[in-house]
Length: 131
Picture (cartoon, rainbow, N blue to C red):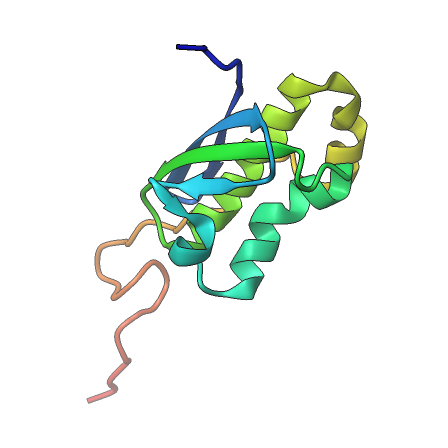
């Protein structure tokens, strides 16, 4: 059995966490044991996931294996994008300025605000009644 070397990257967005393994290969992306086209039917999400490869001009040169959980479908796509970008930097340090310029290495810090007591949601107050 041959052990293939890979580079790891962890990506996060909102509540989604993606653990990415980057192998040299033909460009296959496997998410939770399924092809990413099955997990992400929308073209917008697929483009988001492929963005680091497009930015570094490495489409079809790496196979990706991803474990992702938490959050929604968009958050998971962005977490995978973040993880792939981090793994590409570990694979080749020369990609760092390109990925940094595209904003792919920056973790998006926006998360859902907590609900406050007396309110319906984080900021929505019940309707005011005069009488």
